[in-house]
Length: 480
Image 1 (cartoon, rainbow, N blue to C red):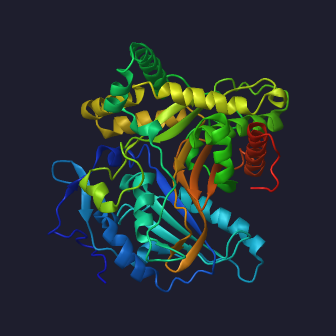
Image 2: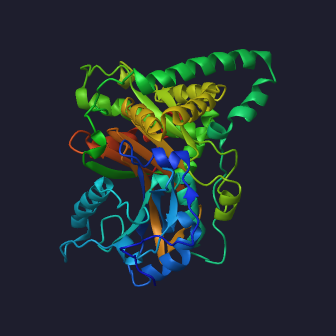
């Protein structure tokens, strides 16, 4: 295997590939986002075949995994192929030996917090894999992929990982996924326009919603700032503060029961549970006192590809759907004066109403055009500033991915739990959700020392139970 060349790391025969605008503004001195994909193994970690698997299965997925971002003679940023020394990308932490599994929980949490803050070196491809060989109370071992957002968004990168992973029960069979609805993100531009043209009333409503949502989005990215609350510290450069990472899992079948009973979507239920949990957490933290938090906004990440389900990597490349194709849907977080007497379904109904209304808006399309114009006039750093301000001025980010129905195996290690998170976000709280084996796995990334992660997770569980009871008319017989 070739090694890095210290004097000339570039392969002269390889073509310089211009970077997409999103790669430039997501990897700058102003904003740098990274995705952590976390796989909990059912068996102890054996890393003897790691280098071979990375060389034969991971690197061939996309040339970006063996490229670095550079500037050419004209100042353009692009991807340049380099020799990859795979050993530099494989990290194996060392903890004290001989401890019981629950004693390693804190070590793994601290390690994840550390690598979340560490910047990926610019002189080699923007990814790493961390092999944590110590058992925790959740799993005998943990494998973490750290991938820079400049390589692609969650849809691209998780799809790429799924393409080289196997089913644990039968590696010869393909992975299957739950029915995937891209209503929220893909009904942009042409699809929305055709839909609105069906009825005059929709055109009028769509125009009003578009103007209102677009102005609101611009204001949130420039002038308006959410209040400081128990979920938003407002600390300058909060993205460089240590984070704590916690997880909670819900039954996807039960979420679908709720969905059916409220005539909504899985996204409606997930966002409603989060909104209810925030109110419960706020109540437990400040009681009946007001924390001044009347204005709280959630940014829901939307996949803007006009496709259903994951594509093969070749299809993503040929159809130009690889990369970063997402946008933010700003949603006000309901603020209730009397959380104890509020019907939990109110939070779902408010989320459902907001999402439905915003689907009749072209604000997402206009915001994309605004960013394109800003990039052409003032350059990618201006877009980085704008995106950073959008995140900084709001309270939380919510991102939802679809995972496989079957159990995965990674390098012969059956995967019992799958999570992901985005780090480098200038917010105190980021919530990421992925479906896996008929469960919804939620990862809570919170500002350490400011947010009580354990309490927030318990509020998530309480909110889920409350909403299930109200929607289905029964108590849960077991904890999920």
